Image (cartoon, rainbow, N blue to C red):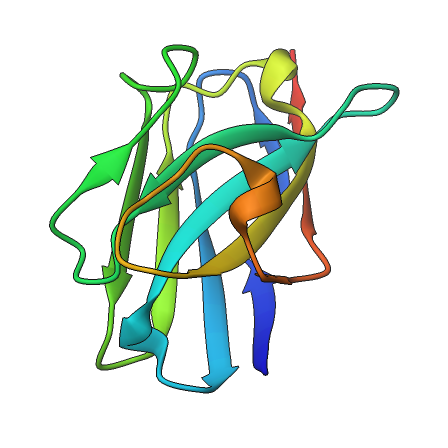
Length: 124
C-alpha cells in the first residue's frame, strides 16, 4: 500500500502561482511513477502532469505544458506541482496518484493509489 497526502491548495488570484505537494508513505516511493490529475465541478477528472519514477521524464497535456512543472524528491518521498499563470479554468480539486512502474502515463486507469485531493480556487 501507498498512502498519498496532498497539500498546498488554496485560493489565488488569476495570474498567480501555487505549489502543490504530495507526501507518500508506505512502499518504496522511488519505484512509482507519479501523476497529478484534477477534477472541476461538473467535469470529469483530467490529467495534469506525470513524472517517471527516477524524475528524469515528465509528461504534460498541452493545456498546462507552458505553465505547470512537476518534480519529485525521492529522498523526501514527495512529488510537487508548481503552477504558474493560473486562470479560473484551473479551479479544481487536484489529486496525486502513484503508478507502479517507471514511466509517466496520462491514463488515470493506470494508477494504483490516489490521494484525497486538495482544492485549488482561482478567482478573477
